[in-house]
Image (cartoon, rainbow, N blue to C red):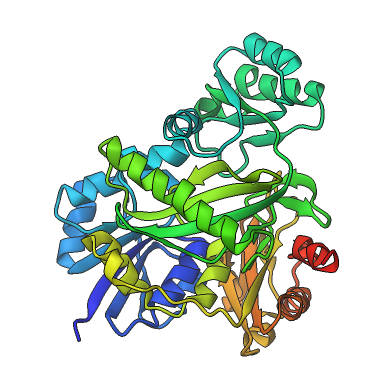
Length: 435
């Protein structure tokens, strides 16, 4: 059995979950994570390392010196910057799309044009660089054009789903006139607002074959009942029952496979994870956006349900042999992840608050805790170090049991100003009551 060395790029909960799953592989000897985190460093086989991931020749040299067989890129920014192009030019194998492939997330204007060209189901839209023109469109469009998006990368916060034309126009001014998101908001996309349930469907792909993961649902807003401002995600659960097996089959063919084939037609071999953020409307699933990488917090719940060897799947994607692999998922269990965020999030974050109750929660065999923003404080204590601090994930035979266990675990972890949602998966439950 060949044992391989892997480098994971990133430091959040998503990368913690990927390292946690990769460490299970008998094919993986050593995992390096740059920059990693306190939690990631506690996993067997894993070492956190400080590397300049923007200096591709130096990074490639380090990879060769440490006989790295595969580089796995977690966040979108390095992908959009072209890290895969930079490393593959030096003969380093990477799981993740090239800079051209990453445009599907990094440039929403490009993504909408791409979806229109290849007839992927999506909302009607117009793109703008001029605030007056955008506001005139909002006020006179033949459909409710109330979704305003910064075209560039804005850390999951560059989307406003307005409830009125006035609010949508205000979002236009913030992005185009006040430069709230800097260069990311120099072009904006104004979209028709869609009604339905949002569902995340991710897939592994080698640029030809698509292997779909179970559907998950993220909870973007800070407060219970989906209230308050948008965040990077306050929790997720999987599988999500708000999309039917028939609809999922359509998503695989008409969204994911069509997108990969469309990218291929554009001369882009897309390797890695393709993530479709969908709205399940009365007329079927529609694409809200694509992401060019694993989602956070969806990855944390997905990894707890993946039965196949993660390294083997990723290597098959890079080698172009995904078709030969049947990716297995645990279909008997449900997983629910609850994010615990720091005081002031999402507007600000609070650093240095001592976290208590973690060891008791981690001793529960049904709970896995992933670190998102945690650092080492005085006397070896763990302290908050970011907006989203931890995600507690529970698996159980039913979605309700998993949600109850994850929420109870979140309540047992404490630090000053800790905030978490107590209703993760609530949309699934209201749907179940209606049946």
